[in-house]
Image (cartoon, rainbow, N blue to C red; front, side, top):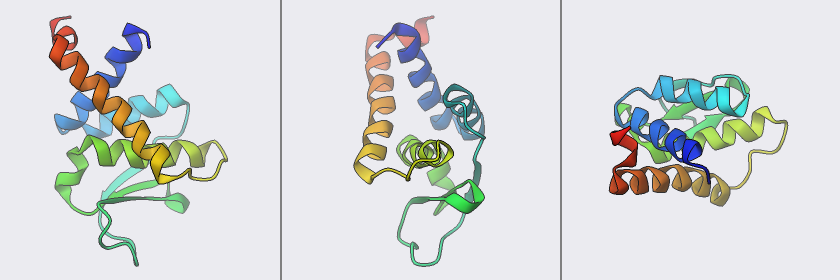
Length: 120
């Protein structure tokens, strides 16, 4: 993975952790060439225990509480489902969505430990 790609992924996670999730979702959408999904707090009937869900018909990332808006794993996991939906594909399985989110978070952790992300 190139350094610009690593910087991008680390930046996205940093934005979410800094409570700038809307900005993170906008730049992710631009990168993956998809519409910007909506973000909201609430529940979907039958999924009340889920920390987050992607509502296909509304292009909506819905999180169960406000704190989850700043959880990179939840946001990136649900954004993966959005990418798949926008591409006309099925939503993809949970393992792939988890791997997508983990990749961003692991790059962020690596960049922090190397201090390359914040020293630029």
